[in-house]
Length: 322
Image (cartoon, rainbow, N blue to C red; front, side):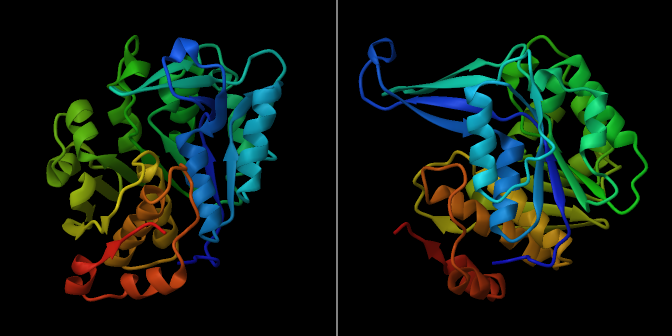
């Protein structure tokens, strides 16, 4: 599944360093940690690059070792990071996964981060004259007043040759002291909106595709993800549902970003509704089959026949890890 002829995409949003215990035991006794990175928008950029779509990631990182690690990791996936701002004062954001038998609590250390200092000056870094799509999420406006102003300005800009996609990406902890009603305002100014039915129910009071269309009349396309059941697309007054693939899940983290990348790549390539949703499901499956947020794409001998498969063949398919 490749989309090499698709024009460029720029993804805007924070990416942080992630520290995960590399040994068992209570977190306060752990002495060895594994360092990774985590960021919804850079995940999408990395998936797009691996699908053959030229992609850039725009953000800000600290002038520190963690910032360099973020830049190196994202660039290694084939993403252009040349427009990322290196902040000489603010640090790179950090979060820690405190793995335990009861689950994995996440502790964020992002207040005052370099990315939270982004503002209107970042618009010039997006290269709006040369991209076909700008991808953002509902995480960025929660980081600071200046980040909210940045997204509002982006959404209000005249769009000559590019679209804006907005993934809800609800993070309740980020909105504890902020008004989440702005998420509806921002989503309604986007061209493409993606949201999970569960998070949409929390934020907007419904996860039903047609009710969301009534709440958000502005976007040309609304995609509602129903977890392992499938996804619905609302466009031109019609709703199309495509069931998800059955997958032997290794790790669920990152599947939403992968779905967004697959769907957006196929959308920019001019594919039909079914193919666009299936491309999303297939890329999500590539994330579900690995412990990494951005794993290798599924091979073409698997994806290409499934993209064109009859409904009964698609429904019967099951993907397993190696």
